[in-house]
Length: 195
Image 1 (tube, one colour):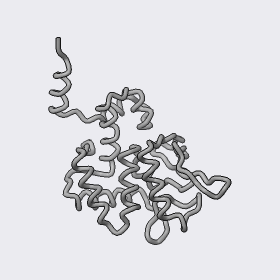
Image 2 (tube, helix red, strand yellow):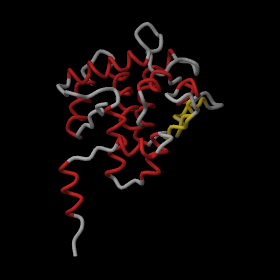
Image 3 (spheres, helix red, strand yellow):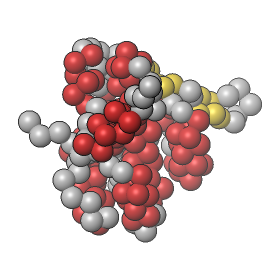
Image 4 (tube, one colour):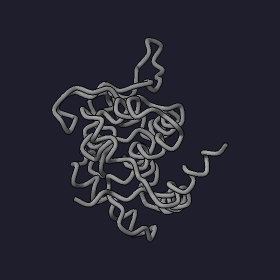
């Protein structure tokens, strides 16, 4: 089975420029960021509810959670899992939530269509396909963000065990398959060894 393509920083920037020109730019940007900054799968993005990411405070204000606990029906493996949000992703969620604040309840889907209904996993996959085509990025899929997230963690020196937990994989072998290895990376790696 062919792996989803890992994007370069330049390609991600190009993708985000295209996203900013779309009709639902804020929504589409959050979909991309949930994939690239948290490694969420299309099925998980489509299943997220406002209450999964936002805490309503007693004084009527709100804040973005530092992590989301996904219920078993929101995940690929039908097991409850925790997704950790970086400060960058929390800012993205807050920006999006401020824009849609007037129409949401904790039980509403976080990502909603024009008709105020949730997206299906397939609809999220189709959205990614359209965005990649518009950005002239070939061979990318809805899983490219997840693979880029995992590969980036590896390149930053994060241990495979920690990456496995963040990716919510049951097997370290699965995580290892996600990490992109190219000839450039192999050359750079051997250059780190000297006497």
